[in-house]
Amino acid sequence: MTTSLGAVRSTFAPWDDPRLEPLVVYDGVTKRYGAEPAVEDLTLKIYEREFFALLGPSGCGKSTLMRLLAGFETPSAGRVLLGGQDLAGVPAHRRPVNMMFQSYALFPHMSVEKNIAFGLAMEQLPKDEIHERVAAMLKLVKLEAYAGRKPHQLSGGQRQRVALARALVKRPKVLLLDEPLGALDRKLREETQFELIALQERLGITFVIVTHDQDEAMTMATRIAVMDKGHVVQVAPPPVIYEAPASRYVAGFIGDINLIEGKVAAVEGGRATIETAIAGRVSVEAAEAVSAGQAVAVAWRPEKTRILRSGEPAPDGWTVIDGVVNDIGYLGDWTTYVIGAGGLRLRAAVANAARLVERPITWGEPVRLAVAADALVLLTR
Image 1 (cartoon, rainbow, N blue to C red):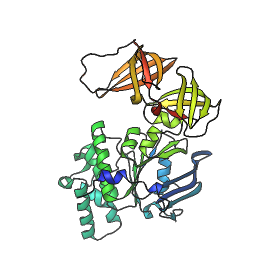
Image 2: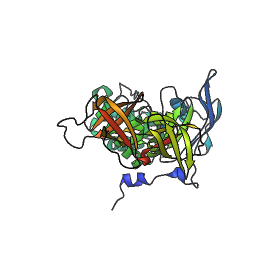
Image 3: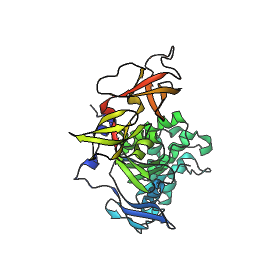
Image 4: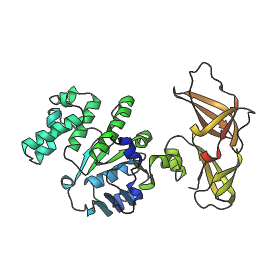
């Protein structure tokens, strides 16, 4: 009986094992372009066999981190280490790292087979070894039947797999993926995400992906580093990033979030009572130290919100907010309700478990939003 890849992935957490050394270390790294730092005094550790995501908006420094590891840029300060070796002075072509670009950068005049073999030929490997490794890669990415075709004779998904095979055939210690799925349509992109997960686990190579797509990072990564203005603001597995964001920025960047501002009224027994304008007093678990009078925010996800008709009682201990339905978005599997309450626009996401015959709650209707105590997150930053 074999162990499924999913089962292996579910127990994979080398960052929690103090005996293990990281494969990649950014040690106090700063990179400036002129006077402006793209990355500033950044420290980050990535472990062997991780599928690690650098996530953030354009200009946050995620591509700079990738280029520093690849050898296309050099740090203004600090060190980049791979396998314990300081990469300072090691040229890009001598690093055990390969990169797959968003544009794929395939040679249009070469066949699929020759595109994949190009890097090995430049290293002047024996022809028999090149043939063997290219054949193995073609089989791995399921392109054996397309070996003789040129890039323009392939679909976008097939070109993406050729670029992936070309990057992997050199057997790098780290594969860098720069927005690799951006050129694919939504359905193919979602299918390819799971193909990449299975491929990475099968090969045991560390993947580092740069993306601004939250869903992509949440689906594929073992851990995510959320970046903002040259800094890493939180590093954690996807469920932690989503369920326990470290700040308002992370909460708002990953998925949809409802957020109300308030002040700490009291702290007792690991819970804080927050005074809010639209929900009254709210009791929230205090994961970090807070004090009376401190300005904080209470956040929760739309899918953890129950929408009730006006006057309908909520379960005991739940936070209740009265409002009016401003907008309704039907997404097939979910319906999103946008509720106006005290000047805020709050969201409730309801799963469409049954076929829609008539909408039970409609535009302009007074409603109540109810949220369980364990769905609330206290944010201090």
